[in-house]
Image (cartoon, rainbow, N blue to C red; front, top):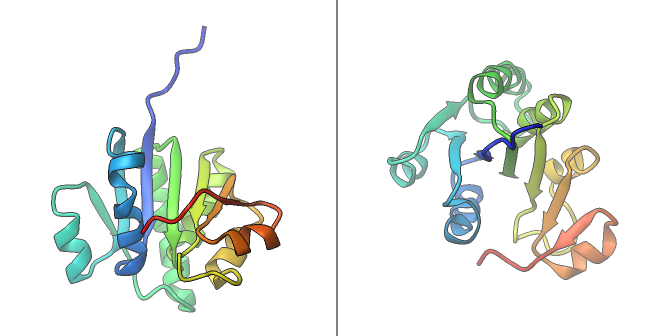
Amino acid sequence: MRREQTPKLLLVCSAGGHLLELLALQRDVWSKYERVWVTLRQVDSTSLLKHEKVWFAFGPTNRNYLNLIRNLFYACRILLTERPTCVISSGAGIAIPFLYLSRLLCIRTIYLESFARYRGLSLTGRIVYPIVHDFLVQAPEVAARFRKALYRGSVF
């Protein structure tokens, strides 16, 4: 008989608004689970996550191909070290290597599109849309346009 694995979450996001979106889900979604964060070292991320386990990735990430490659290798190291059962990301560019590698390693992947996206998808959203298990949006208009998108309300 196979023993169920205790959920362990890897929460991946850029600093700023992406971090705030994941933090808004703390009480209702992930506070009861073991978790590890991956974000960029900024004043807000250092302060808001001071009591959490955090790995700081290489930034800037948007349209920076060198850091994309560096973060791809870093993601491999973190995923193999932490062994999460689920990777949740709200973007931005930092999400791409973590979600793609997680999918290759058969780890559940969830992407939360920004609440600022009420007409279409962000660049990161368009890149990860084909591979994530769950693609959550915060606007019903977006869910109506994309078959895989799920609307479950807004975090704010």
